[in-house]
Amino acid sequence: MNYCDSPIHYRRRPTREVAVGDPARGGVIIGGAHPIVVQSMITSDTMDTSESVRQTLELAAAGCELVRITAPTVKDAANLRNIAGELRARGCRVPLAADIHFKPEAAFEAAQWVEKIRINPGNFADGKKFVLREYDDAAYAAEVGRLAERFAPLAVRCGELKRAMRIGANHGSLSDRILSRWGDTPRGMVESALEYARIARSAGFHDLVFSMKASNPKVMIQSYRLLAARLSELGPDWSYPLHLGVTEAGEGEDGRIKSAIGIGALLADGLGDTIRVSLTEDSTREIPVCRELLAEVAGLAGKGPPGIEIPPPFDPFSYARRPAVEIDLGDGIRCGGSQTVRVVVPERAASEAGGALRAGSEVQPEAIVEELEICEADPSRELGVSSERVLVTVKDGLDMPVIAAFRLLAHRLREEGRRNPILLKDCLAPPQASLAPSRAQLRSAVALGALLVDGIGDAILVRNEKDARASVKLAYDILQAAGCRSFKADYVACPSCGRTLFDLQSVTARIKARTQHLRGVRIAIMGCIVNGPGEMADADFGYVGGAPGKVNLYVGKRAVRFNLPEADAVERLVDLIREHGRWIEPGNGRQ
Image (cartoon, rainbow, N blue to C red; front, side, top):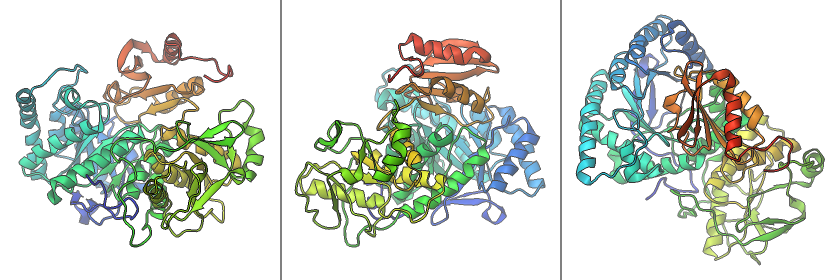
């Protein structure tokens, strides 16, 4: 199965055009040859009309082209009429999307007032009790038939009203029926979405957009690739656009880097027609990140060497690290084989950053590039590598996109039967002037993260960020976000929305302040039950809004503490981590 035309030559995936609203009156077209649409979501209570209008106007002024609003109940969905009416009266024509989860009736109501409906197949008219049972083919078909009875009328109604629809599958919120047959996997996400698409198509409805969101960039990338490949197999009539996003990416640098890896890697392969960067911050702050990310990917995506085509030198649909021999980098640092991915720095950066970072820190340079034996190769030619016991990298100055260059290098090494470890670089021509930190962060995260998720790379070198300390920290942050190395706690934190039952930004900050030193511990911070046990996927511990002012705590997907007062819940989370043997006191050494 092919998920894109070429792993080394950028070609945007051809898709249907899906209109959201009337393009002549402020609507947008997703897909085709149209620019990638930037979207976000307001955070207010949908019943608060004035605040919902205010936040939508702020997003529109920031450059958001499609605004999503939660509609958890029929009452909320009905108030979309007032919100849309006030916005149109003020001259704001930005199209609106209603976010629907458990209530099909809310979707029917919302479709009257907004231009797009988003449904989550795992939550919409399907069963989810986290109970596995066996379905024979007849029982499975009967369940799908029951879904069709609930869902097909919505597709018909959306067609009548000229509404678009997003079928948005999320990792961790698949139905029990899908889990029983496919597991909590990219395959399960894809099959769940395709079931709903078949029902919509049988009703004559085609204004569909798909999404395959996960908080783990590896899972997210594999899911979108698999979906693109399956849609291609089904034929050109199935060329629906894709909405890209890393769900629950978190806040600050971590959220930006995670999003850059997941969204950027797919955009660089020509996938994606609309994006959202989901940050646990004010939603207006998502828009500049989207714009910067699109700009950086445009600079990284391009054509590889003319006349050369290769198959992907990796499995696009499941992660496996490229086999490499293990070599010594000096000072007891080993690279390749089963070793972790190493952080290499220029001598200048080591001298500037080393003294400040080395005192008991996990975040420190591990090798100096000028002191290593490295073969610098042009992967468009025979490599001429004399030994497997040296690092190989792409030569500076070549006129190639960096992602394509290293994929071609991995292909050449495999073709020549060599297992040299690869040193990844985030650029093939170091910037002449200092980049803004936000640009350097996104550019390096896309270039290195896309390759690491492919399983390519045994050491990394960050050069886009000129500040020595920041470059070392950025290297470790990219490795953590790509799931290659852990040096601190990892957080799955949903962006705020109208369903949220506590202040996500302040609570996330409090939890981070208490737990960030817990290397290898993954903590989910979820504002409500919609993003509760399912969306937490593979988190170790969860902090979930259960009711206003009340919090439930989870171990994995199992709730173990209920209705804790919010004022006490962070410390009770610490107690829970301690009970399970995962707690260390700050400053007591490495975990």
